[in-house]
Image 1: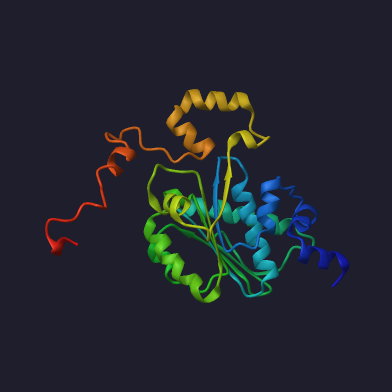
Image 2: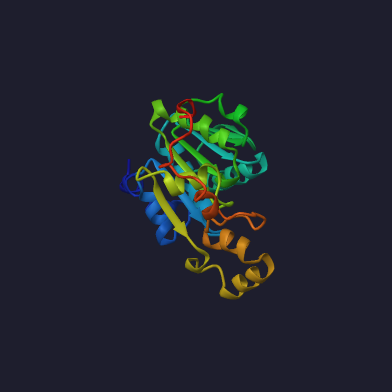
Length: 252
C-alpha cells in the first residue's frame, strides 16, 4: 500500500477531492469525516446531501469489505437516482473497482461489498440483515413502517443510519427524531442561504411561486403545519393535560 493509499484510508475528504474530483463544502467535509452512527440531514433542495450520501456509501463499500449498503426512498425511481450517483463516482476512480454484479438496482464489488437500491416499502426491506449503512432519502416522505423495519437490522451490525430530507409538516419519523430523538443523533441543518450555488434572485422567485409555507419547508428546513389545518399544532397540544386524572382508573 502506497503513501497515497494510506492517506486515502485516513482522510475521506482527501480521497473525495483527489480520487473522485469532488470538492465538498465545509458541512459536507465534516459529514464525510464524522464517525457518528445516527445522522439526520435536514438540508434544503440542491444543497448536495444526496451527493454526499453517495460518496459516503461508496467509501463504505470500498473500505469495509463485505459490507451491505441499502439505499431507500419513497419510490424506486428516487432510490435509483441515488444509486446512479454512487455508480458514476465509482466509474471515475482510476482504476475503477471491479464489480461482479452491476445493474440499475445493485452492485457487488470485488471485495464482496453490496450496494442495493430499494423502493420505500416495508416488504422489500425485511429481506436484508446486518447492513453497514442504510441511507433513507426523502425520509419525511417515507412510510413510518419502513423506519420501523430498518432499525432492528442495525442491532447486530452496529451499522450507520442516515435520514435525509426536507420537512413535510410536523409528522412522521423524520420530524419526530429531529425534534425528540435526543443526543444520539448528529443533526445537520443547511438552509438555502448557506449554499453559494443557490442565487438570491432564484430564491425570491421560488418564494413568490411556492408561497411562504412550502418555501420555508423546501429551502429553510422549517417543520411547519399544513396550510389546510383548521387547528394549529399549538392549539391541539393545549387540549391535553397530563395533570388531569382520568374519571375511571381503568382508563389509565
